[in-house]
Image 1 (tube, one colour):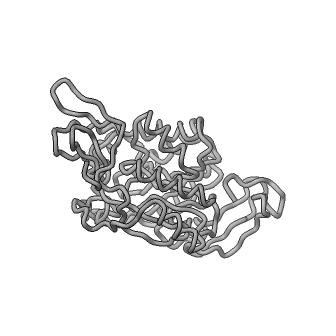
Image 2 (spheres, one colour):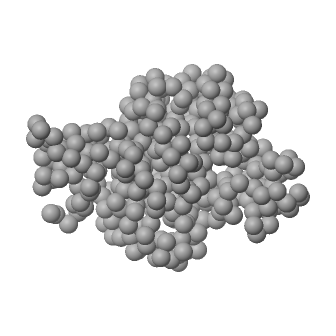
Image 3 (spheres, rainbow, N blue to C red):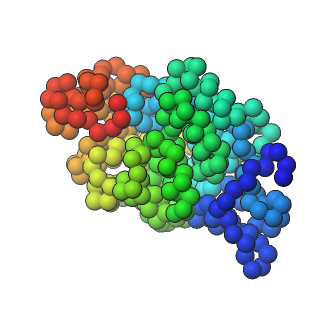
Length: 340
């Protein structure tokens, strides 16, 4: 096997001679030399291999709030990186230069798991975030990085679309401490027509994270004018979240800007985000945020008991912080949901 090809295990052979990738619900069926929708997993030497292990793009130190994660180690730094490719086909992709990349030569060839963990520690980061493109598709690499991070006391964060099959889902998230899950819409039409995928597997990932793991996770929904931003859809989505995964899971509504293959849509008005936030809060969810726009009120974390602001933010900077070391509100001593 060539050195840049890393073996994987979630696949099986079909009677017609093809091999099916069983990592995500796309279930790509490949002949020798073919790549899956994600581009980074391919059939070589009669098996499915990962072509981007230890090769990264977009290495950067970010505020954890940029992921976005507001209730996980607020104010800390995350060492962030991705690879290339994605298993969805979102027409609105905001990171299309990385996620739609079809040339792995753009990747840094020296990003070994050991080096990434070491550099993150040296720069004072509290976590390493798998982001910029979909980490599920470079699962084996992400897990190897996570193992090295945990040796050094670093947390791991997956910024993911949640589009993954059952068995790999269990393995992947067993190495993650936190996740931001993109719930891109709340209709099957939107997922099928705009992202080239299906809604149900994402909902299953959210339920799995809540019921069967200790992973701290937050939900982010990019609201696109006339596509997934109606009051009725937000009502339906927030009700589902409340009934299926609980009121303590933070939800972020973020603004779309024209990009990739959706240049004909206008940017999301702030009013739309505020409306979505208001609807979701009225449905009882405790932590609802706005993002990709300047809206200080929508960046605040409130104590659900006494209603005081316990974390105020100016863009990604912490402006006020009223939690003790245990994550309890300094006004009424109620525990804030999250990791502090």
